[in-house]
Image 1 (tube, rainbow, N blue to C red):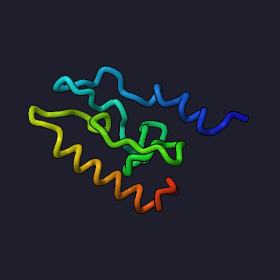
Image 2 (cartoon, rainbow, N blue to C red):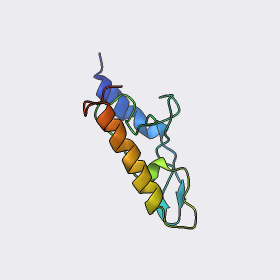
Image 3 (tube, rainbow, N blue to C red):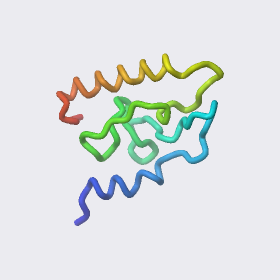
Length: 93
């Protein structure tokens, strides 16, 4: 039987959004959501299928407007940090 982590890693490219760039910063390549079939991370930033891998960067944002994405990324980083803390740092759902 395949290792679940290996299987999850192998399926990641299928769940990313290619060619979704704006403002010269990659954006929208890692979709957030509750359904692992159509998203890469859960709403807390944890990669589906991997217990302790979290993402907090512009790839989670669908698009970037004409202003700096820094405030949005800070808010997202805080959200992901809270998600990790609520899981006790163990990646448990």
